[in-house]
Amino acid sequence: MIEASFWAKENKETLVSADYVKRAIKEIRYRSSMIRDHILDTVNRGQILIDLEGKKCGQVNSLHIIETGNCEYGGVSRFFLYFRLIHPFESI
Image: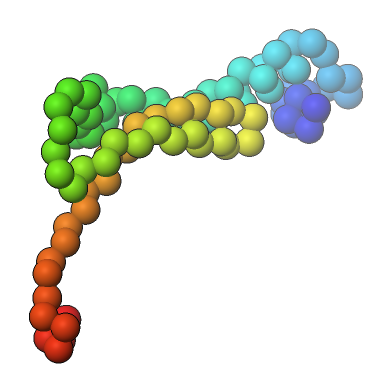
């Protein structure tokens, strides 16, 4: 209702009509989906690669959930793990 009230005031209206509520919902959904859309775009452009087959030592695929106010969505991540064996008295 706060955002619907904003749109009514922007149009110099004293009453918040259903049209302003619909616009507020549309604007909130648009803003909430921007992060999801950016992540999907990077996957589609090949900047984020997801390997769904086979096994590789030191790589972990994960699923994550991101909540941004009124919107929740899931995504994928990959973690790379690097190990180095050192002598117990060797400085890092």
